Amino acid sequence: MYETPGGTILRAAHQGIEQLTLDRDTLHYKDVVAHRYAEVIYNGLWYTPLREALQAFFTVTQQNVTGVARIKLYKGNASLVGRKAEKSLYNTDIASFTMSQTYNQADAEGFIKLFGLPVKVQALVDGK
Image (tube, rainbow, N blue to C red):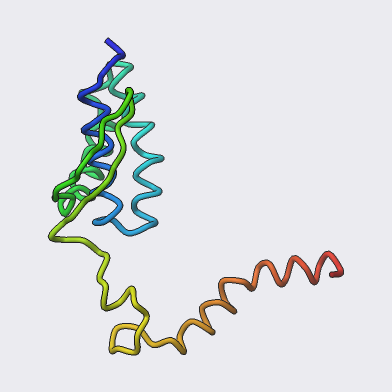
């Protein structure tokens, strides 16, 4: 019952496509919710409002998760070796960090200062 080689392969492929089509925060939160969803189902709580609410979350987050993944199988391991998705959030024009209308390198300075502010405050509190 617990050995699922086909499921392992599908999960590796699906996670690879999710990494392309979901933003970082949604992907991280989805991992948290997935554990609770599995517990609900495992405990036989399929017809509960909680399961329905969790299902609504997955229905929304999985809308753009579609694509193709290549998986290499070797000695009991399933490794993602390639993937592509029409609705991928990865765009080479943006990822290259060249000057464009989408990304302005000057924005990075403010982001870095704001993102690092809690660490700076902690260092001041610690007397460093």
